[in-house]
Length: 336
Ligand SMILES: Cc1ncc(COP(=O)(O)O)c(C=O)c1O
Image 1 (cartoon, rainbow, N blue to C red):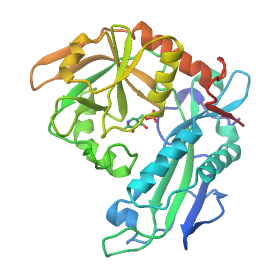
Image 2: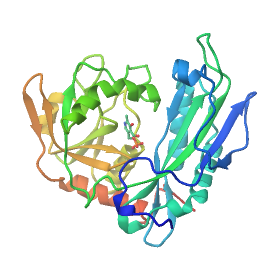
Image 3: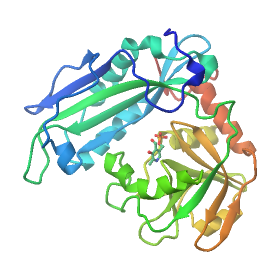
Image 4: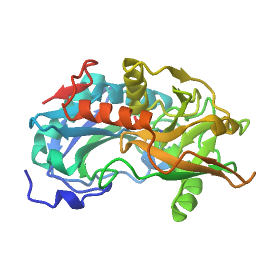
């Protein structure tokens, strides 16, 4: 293992030995390869720069107490990248290629998978973008898929417990229904910064409502909303949120634990009937929410000052699978 101070890692980029690259041209994918070069030569007229042909993914690699290395739900991320590629008219990477490249990234950078005890993990950031120079508006025919590994620190230093506050955003639409909302494409994030950056400046994050009616909960910053209402796990059904792999995993675990699950539109005003609220995603698993502020109406929805019992149980259940402490009955881990 590398001799670095794992304890000091946060969620930011740390350069590792290699990245894995693969180029698409002439209608086919080439051979993936590892390179120490983290820069690329890109034509200034490349379609990624002109028309935003870019998609990315994010998944984690865990070193268990048994010293086994597990990649969590690689296939689900591969399939989501395929959907993002299709939505932006890019070449669709085969699932097998995506998985092969993730495995190469981990094997090549195995010494960068942090020790269990630190709570840090190796994050994989796959990114796909258009490289063909093009001035006429239209998709290119050349693409690059890169897997960028980076060790990252635990989202919660000192354990699951830090609460997040959200502020309701009405003046920015993150994504349009039937637009790019359910895809993990760069443009959605650029579109969200106008709301998330001012919220971050106040130590909060932005809660987006549905673009059309501003009635229902959409995304929680760069995460899905989840809530507990009278013992039921409730999460939004919406065409403009990213289908989160974490959310899907938590719903499955909730059902395993006998917790009923509902996926349906959630009106903002219904939040007053929720006992627990949270944001879920790969980075934090669950970020429990203490309050959601609606500055336009003056209403504040409160969910307490500590993580609730249902989220606490689900958080530990999922982490136990990721670290190999609980049987992986759903076959989510790829063990190296
Ligand atoms: C907009 C958005 N929603 C939800 C999520 C959570 O998805 P996942 O659980 O697959 O990380 C992410 C993070 O990837 C995201 O960027």
